[in-house]
Length: 355
Length: 191
Image 1 (cartoon, helix red, strand yellow):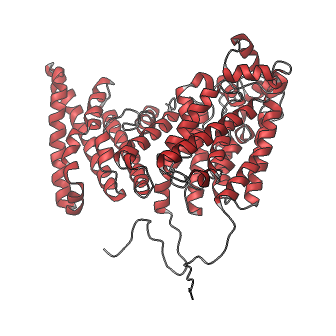
Image 2 (spheres, chains in turn red, brown; image 1 turned 45 degrees about the vertical axis):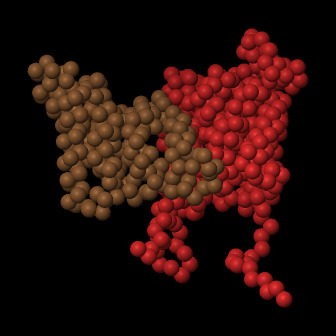
Image 3 (cartoon, chains in turn orange, yellow; image 1 turned 180 degrees about the vertical axis):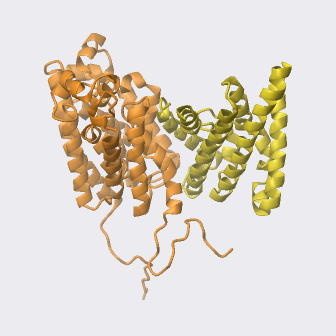
């Protein structure tokens, strides 16, 4: 009779990679819906193209590496990377732009490092930064929210095709795009916050952080809270990031003068803040491991986001801040090893003893 | 005070010597396999860089410039750096024989670390004063140390990763450095 001896841990948990990834995809739905509501079909075309590239590249690389293709495709991790990159890109991006981004994400950032679970950098953010550095003129062309754009154009299939596959006249393009709230705030350095809010349509048509953008962030916040409730990640990293960002914004708000860095509400509900806080910063592979480490990791991301947004060249900085802290995460882990139950003091990670 | 802050942030983050100016890549790749060695190398390089920056300023401002021999600056800086490195080598050999053995050939190789010569030459190009030169050398070293130490912690993790055979070791290290350099471009415009 075979006597089965299983090694620890003995608890059973249905938390498979497939299930976690499915929850993350589900949680992006409110954000995707609101993005589509305000910015048109471009978000959906982004996601479709990115998913096709994602699955194709993943399968191709797995085949080259001689790994089981169907097994790894079923864990949905390539789809999560694809959806996150597609959401981060301007709506209705060209197909080749998305393709280049997905090559950087899936091939370079993920599989060159050994695939799922080994990537030291968040793949979607690597793809985004590669595109932002290489093709700034395409990456800064955000479509205007629906009420500031040409009537009905963003829901028009022909326009969408021309945007994605090329052939749209540049004059039509100008009518469809507009600067993002963070960009507007950065470009109008001489005005007080009150004047910017009154004069610029993107702010005067919105409630507190730019028409459309504020609702997109609220939707991603809801999706993030759902993931938090389902215990997909702990609260430490996202909350630390948001609190630090709000703290910096409050300190440097300067009562809305012309030197103001922007109100805390603008920083929390504009740009990629909520998407970053709940879907990017919480990446279990590329972030710090312990809870204390995640607090430090999240807080430093919040600080870097504010510093680069306000004093750097780029209007939004979530991708840069996340990559910079991905770089620092192993070092943070090294010095934040939690105390093991029953032991006195935590040892540093690589100190194995027995010298 | 502001100009010192600008020099410091500029040299540590915005124009980081390793990831933005691509100077000093050999120790960056060579000594980053273990965190503890990297910390030792960072300390040694900080010592050498700051001292070499000060010494080469003195040589340039007090000897070469008055005599009109500034065309000799490169070769005389190399001489100054070699002397400072020799001093650092003797110092480490006496104070920490273990670190001396661990660093091995990379310790004398600080002489050929292009970041050290780069700082000395940039000091003359940017017409830094004595205190600015000292700070610039120190800030360059802080930037170098920061990147080297973070990179070594990451490489310890990469050593355990399932990297495809052809990309193991230095290749994946170079790719990581490239991705990091992309991330450091985010600091552009800070100062």
